[in-house]
Amino acid sequence: MIRFVKGTAVDMTEGTVVIETASGLGLEVFMTGNALAQIHMGQELKVHTYFHVKEDGMQLYGFFAKDDLYMFRLLLGVSGVGPKGALGVLSGLSADELRFAVLSDDVKTISKAPGIGKKTAQKLILELKDKLDLQEVIENRMAGDAGSTSAQMPSDTGEQKDRAEAVEALVALGYSGTDAMKAVKKVPAEETVDVESILKAALKNL
Image 1 (tube, rainbow, N blue to C red):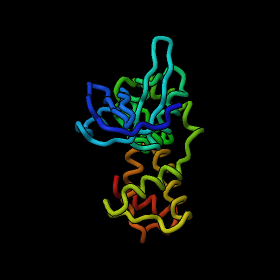
Image 2: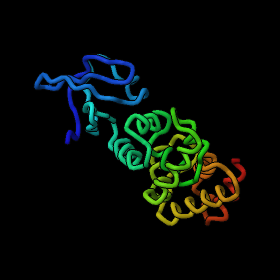
Image 3: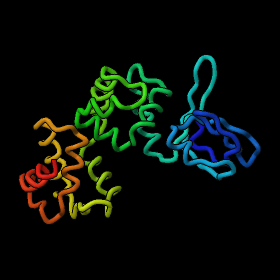
């Protein structure tokens, strides 16, 4: 198993980058378009990889973040989704966006990923939902967006749980998971007395 590749970017195609290691070995690594856009020739790279073996060859798929690799592996566990399909999903959605879309049954958002139709999106939700945790997703999103919006970091796990329940309530009311998450994220800490107060404040943002 090749866990990661570290070296210099020496060549690039539409979907891959060639990384020359310190030993002089050149490895071709498949990456998302977003990741490849960040690379320039001669740059030192470290990418976390998945080594895929098939009948007609072997391929490396790489990610800058371990979290993206983790979600890539989960996607491969979905029947009918191969490495290129999984890479396509992550080229359109970040790992956390995918998590939240799955947990909130947001078929529309997942369907926007390249090569993913409505039926495949529904299958992803069905097979991945039990493997993900809503509260963990919200905590990650809050941490990632700290300081970028009017929302503040939840001060304790109680507030995090209330925010998660508010998101679930909005989804139950018919709002998309993505919209519900954005609305709850905008609620300032001083308005998070309980689930009801968070919900009322979030509704104003919708």
